Image (tube, rainbow, N blue to C red):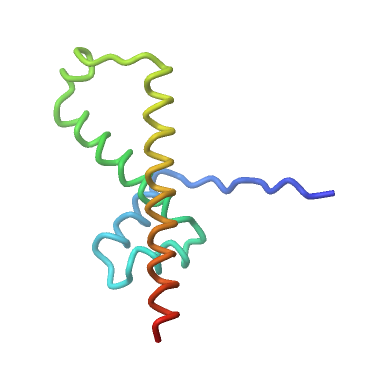
Length: 102
């Protein structure tokens, strides 16, 4: 029988530090993700959440005028997750193709 893997929890500060390392550090985003044992999809999801939060913080009036249902928010979150997964798979495919050409 398979064991259920527990998900690791990251604090907001840990997420912020990982994002800063990816944006401003000397390592590539893939290297940062490997070092922190997270997927690139999760990294890009956190980055999007941070950008959205920053936008809301800079323009708090837009939150009240642009209310979305929970269903719409869930669909958008699923869409972003799928986009990030597709990006990750595409990046891995490109890397594998490069290795095979050598």
